[in-house]
Length: 240
Image (cartoon, rainbow, N blue to C red; front, side):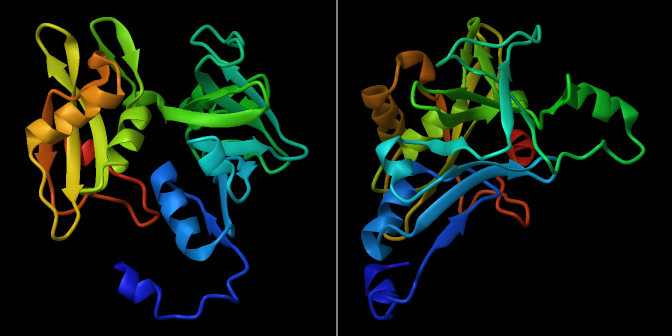
């Protein structure tokens, strides 16, 4: 919403606001708190696990992209494909054990088995933890892009695109490529009244990211496809 809309209402009674269901970009958190103050909380969890981590006001800005620290009574393991714990700071599949963990998926033993490991449950998210115990999501496991043998997590690129003043929304996927296996394609929604070209978007990524993380093509959309809880439907983007 434009500033003239958000500033005409008295929001001084606003105590807190919770963000969940889909990743919260650092730029969105920063802009929200510049307008409404330090009342923004962000949690990570799933229907299968319940709440897992919680980030308080300003955590998301001070530690760009964090989903917070582990909640009391929750246990997390970050595992590689072989089921081994990854080193601190490295990316692994996030498995959680909570008091509200589901016993399994209804009438789907195969999905239940593939999601569980030693009493922990994964919904397919890739993450890492820093030295202070703050967790970060990198991508969905099936969203990870392998280009030229290098693992690329779209979340970092999407967060960078969201910092561009002309970009309202963005999503990045991998598309088949004969030479590299996969290359990156960005889908961008431009803010009303702003203009930006494909070359400018690619150059912007080149300025802030390693070259192998630069999208090779940019597609402009009026809006990104999302489900009712706000998650971007990347499977629909792959069909465009």
